[in-house]
Amino acid sequence: MVKFRSLIASMVAATALTTGFVGSAAAAEQSSVSAQGSKCATVWASNGKGSVHVCWNWHKNSRGTYDGTYRGKFYDHAKDGRWVILQARWAGRGWTPVKTAANGESFSADFYGISGLNFRACLTGGYCGSPAS
Image (cartoon, rainbow, N blue to C red; front, side, top):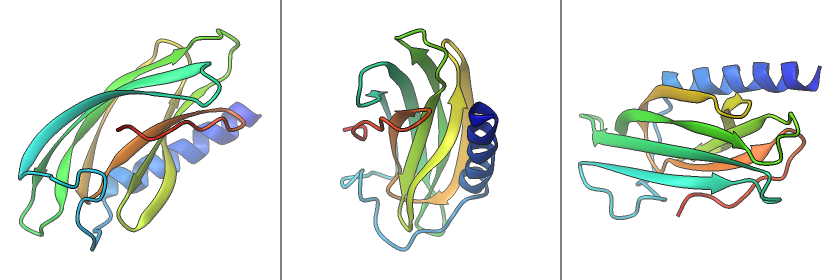
């Protein structure tokens, strides 16, 4: 039941991210953001038992915010059946689950009209790690 609730929460949050939220602040995590760019990082749960390799690219839109894509793969290093959760944060929005999956699953999605995007990994039940640097 916990996995199902986590999955529903992730789907709702992913819809929010792909629908796009216009942020008024400059790109906080990407302080020297150019009109376009890309980045890859591996983010870890705080206990080291799960990680997500995530890559994202962005381009500035006519509203002064960013559109782009993010993609990656989930890893359950403990192989304990816990789901790994990818959370995102952007200007005007706190940490929000955007994708969740079991070990080895890949993902890809778009985002629109946001700024200050960053990611971190968590496990079912918490253990959120540090944001991508």
